[in-house]
Length: 286
Image (tube, rainbow, N blue to C red; front, side, top):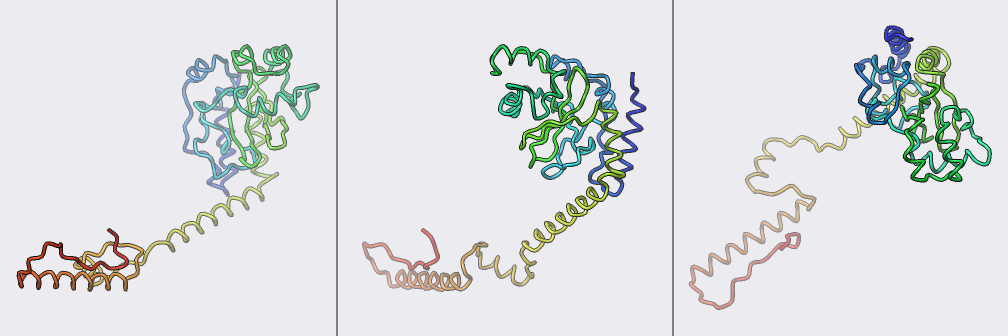
């Protein structure tokens, strides 16, 4: 049986290996004490390796941008309350089932040991998702999400404990690791050696994009208004709008003329059945 201390050591080493890419680390999310709720909700039994992993870190709730292509648990592992049956995913019915027949291909053959009940039921239903098939407890579990452009999902086989990735825009399925412990070990190697330069370059590019966005946001803000201009605006009671200032000035003059005319007529006590007409500016709305 694996211990949480060995998983904790591997999580720490992976985070340290990503010191050059701090946004891709996962240091703040704590683990959970029990997996009973998800096992009860899905009517499954998780491999002990999976339980030990989430006791250290419970995944990342917020995806980085549109996801990354490096398949690191620090970036791709979902919180356990977001783990869900792969058999209920659209990808499963639209792509996985097609690749099961007439002969398993595109990598689904790697997952047959994990889906014995579903595979048997699907053969009987001519590979249709009948009510009988849908009632089966899940045998494959979505535990993570990678790059959106590739429709990547990390999938745990509950029987073998193996972790696969579905690259759904191809589609194909690949073996990632024989379990969480090996996934962590391989990810350390990826971060330290195999993809270090790529990861660092993308991380730096992401930072540059964030800086550009901040500059764009700052540039779109209106310049600060001086006190004198602000006081004058308040006195004139002009609302902020997209109407040109010259049009507003013309409107004010016309309204003053109308007010003056009204006062004059009242003084002359002109008794007229028609209501007095006031002049409106062109930019003013009824």
